Amino acid sequence: MSQSENERFNQSPEAGAVAPCWSCKQPVAARALFCHSCGAVQAPGQLDHFARLGVAPGFDLDLDRLEKQYLGFQRAMHPDRFVTKTAKERAIAEQQAVSMNEAYETLKDPLRRAAYLLERAGTTAAVDKDQTVHDPELLMEAMEAREQLSEVATIDDLEKLQVEAGAKAIDLISQLSKAFAADDLDAANRAATRMKYWRKFLEESRARRAALEDAL
Amino acid sequence: MAYSEKLLDHYDNPRNIGSFDKNDGGVGTGLVGAPACGDVMKLQIKVGADGRIADAKFKTFGCGSAIASSSLATEWVKGKTLEEAEKIKNTEIAQHLSLPPVKIHCSVLAEDAIKAAIKDFRTKQGSKDKAAE
Image (cartoon, rainbow over all chains, first blue to last red; front, side, top):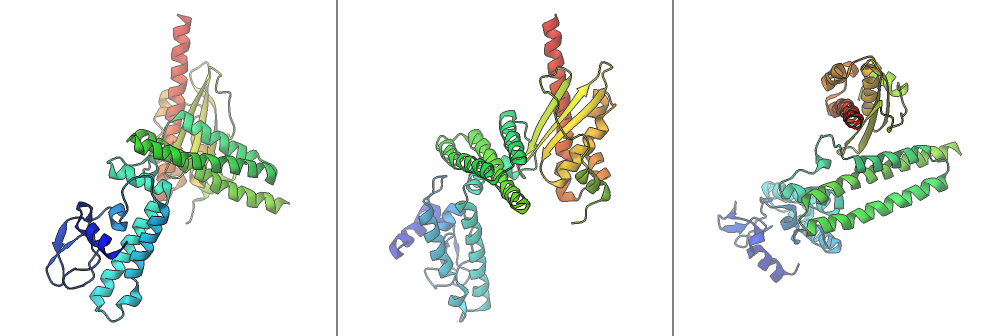
C-alpha cells in the first residue's frame, strides 16, 4: 500500500474506532500502526483480521495481495527497527507482529478463513465445535473414502485416491466461494466440514503411503 | 500423554470391528462424526426377537480414544434392551477408559453413535409396523 493509500485507508470507516495515542494523546485510528502526530508505534486495536491486513472482507481473497500486505506490515514491525526505541515500544511492536501473524494464518487458509467468516457472521463453524454431526450423506462419503484408503494395497492405487481427494478439496473452495457469495451460511458450514474430512483423508493417506513404502 | 491400560487394550484389540447389512430390518445403524477432528464412527446393533441387543459392530476412523470408546460401547450394549442401552452415558465410557480431558468428546461421539443406532432401528421398526397394517 502506498503512503497516500494507507492514509486514506486509515481514515476510512474500516480503519476502526479512533482512540487517543498512548504517548501524545492525539486521536489515532485502531488500524494505524503509528501515531500521525508523534510517530509512536500503536498497540493492535480491536479489528477484524481483514481490516488488520487491509484487505476487503470476504471469502474470495487475492492471496498475493494478502501476502504482500502482511509482509509489508511485518517489516514495519520488525524488531530491527525498534532497537533504539523504548522497551514499551518494542513490546508494542511485538504485539502487533503477533496479531498480524494470527490474522494472516487465519485468512490465508481457505478452511480457517471460512470458519472465521462464519464466526464473524455469528455462527460457529462445525469444524470449530466439539459437537457431533449426523449428516448421513457427508459422513457416508467420509466413511467410504476412509474404507477405500484402508483397503488400498498399492502406491499407484493410493495415488489415484489422493488425486481424487485433492480434486474434491479444490472443488470445495469454489463451493465455499459460492455459498459465501450467496450468503448461504448453512451451505458454507457444510462445505467447510466436508473440506475438513477431505483434509483428514489426505493426512491419513500420507501415513498410509509411508506404511506401504515400508512394506516394499 | 499417558493412556490407561484399558484404553490401550481396546485400541490394540478392538472388539466387534466390522459391519452388518444396514438394510437388514433387525439392524440399527448409527453414523456420526466429529468435524473438529475429522473422525467418523459407525456403530450398528442387531436386535433379537426378545428385544435385546444380540450383537453389535463398529467401524471408526479416528484417534485411539475414538476407537477405544466405540469398541467399549459395542461391548456394553450387548445383552441390553434398547431402553437400557440408551442410558449409557459418555461419562461412564470416559471414566472406564480414563480418557484425558481433551479426548472426552470421543466418548460423547460413542454415546451419540449408540443413540443414533437405536433411533435408526426404531425408525425402521416403525415403518415396518406401518407396512404391516
